[in-house]
Image 1 (tube, helix red, strand yellow):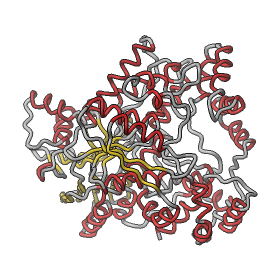
Image 2 (image 1 turned 90 degrees about the horizontal axis):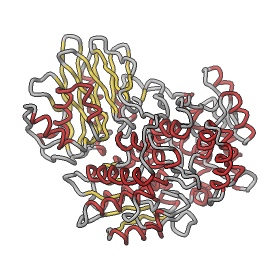
Image 3 (image 1 turned 45 degrees about the horizontal axis):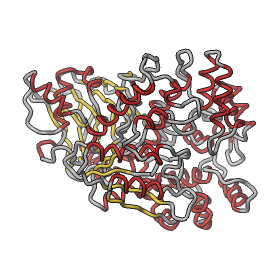
Image 4 (image 1 turned 180 degrees about the vertical axis):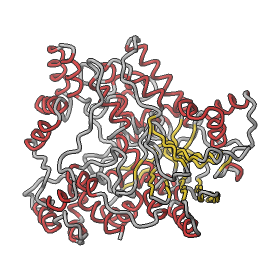
Length: 627
């Protein structure tokens, strides 16, 4: 685990070295154990490869990067982990490859030498890497199937550059990047971010999950990304529910087993929900004698507290529990660090709870944690995707079953028939009709604190950035939506939060649910295996872990996760919030006087509290921090 940075400049001078050194220093927390970069001057320009390393597998100096193939043709910088590196190493050794380290980096380099792009589908891991081919004079950038590890890139007339962090990108850039007004609007008004390949900076792009780019060095410009993996939603499973649950059990335990490979202490982030509880209990199932350290956020004296469930799981596995309680004063104190850590604006203060969990792990000497992220998007979690489930049934002409599902789904806590019907209509609408429905539901495209004139002049689309749906097979609407959530929007933001927060404290966060094998297995199951006719979410996962996870956890009918008492926090620090919101950004499209008035109305009970308050705070503090 680490941070990587690289560039190629046609007319390079010592300034490019200085920019590289600054970029690596900015990412120091991503890799505090070793830092280095190499410069390769050629007739066409200069290539720079840099890495800052967090040592997790093979802690020796020989495993550091940049790393080169024995013949010097390839240079590799790599951020992530290849969990099946032992099996790949054995296969490559049988084919005659000699290894000089015990690292997964050397295995990745050898796999690329042997198989090229075909190596990618053999990898079980999280990764973002760059391979310089000095013979063909190309640089290939690759990102893992789900975008667990970040990778940003940009090009100019004089060259191109890339890094693991937008802050490092700003250091590498020849000039200061401009704000992307479209992304600012999408975030501020609609709460949407981390989708597509745009960032909050006009010049920087994010390489999409499961994609790669090959850059010809002689031209020093990036080509169009191409996809090397995408999820399939074609149903091909003929297994019974019971057979599928046992298959899932085996796949999940095998994944957790691979994710436990480490040469440094590891633990788990435990929210108390089903997903993180599954990971912790699977760790105990695989390693009966392993000391398991868990790290949890506890919302003291709050309705969103998960402490009861955290305690139940810790007792069940005999874990060494670590908990963190957070106050509004601590949030205010850490706000600038949190915003700087994330690099770009984000959704809510639940990200701060996660930030503190990883800080707790670092304070207790744990370098690697396992996390339950991704299960909701692949297992049919959250609210059970009722709109998509009913549309799938209607596709098949199963009208009575759709009505029965709505009734059963609505009987669960926090749900209602009206809410289910709203989701059905929303899932089946698009374009202008969807915009009308959003307005009827109180969602405005141009709220009173936005000045639309400057945005329209800049060509900003003043509408909800609705995703282009993946065309589903007949009756596979929910699976199409899950596939999109896994790779195009939804999960990407959550993975970004986890990567930045963990790396801030030099902790590697692993997500065992997110392997291509597990996702492909789940997406080929019948939809009713994931969300049952009774409206139960993650039905197959719950069944698969019976006997490993306490029944009380598997039978839970609510979902909270790392939730925070955000409204109470914001109200208790109202004076500070007022100062933040009034801090002038100078942006012509943002009416901060109207924002301040809006906040006063919320405090007076004249408007409901929403996450909009956090988005204002986050964006204004982030933007001011750029200058």
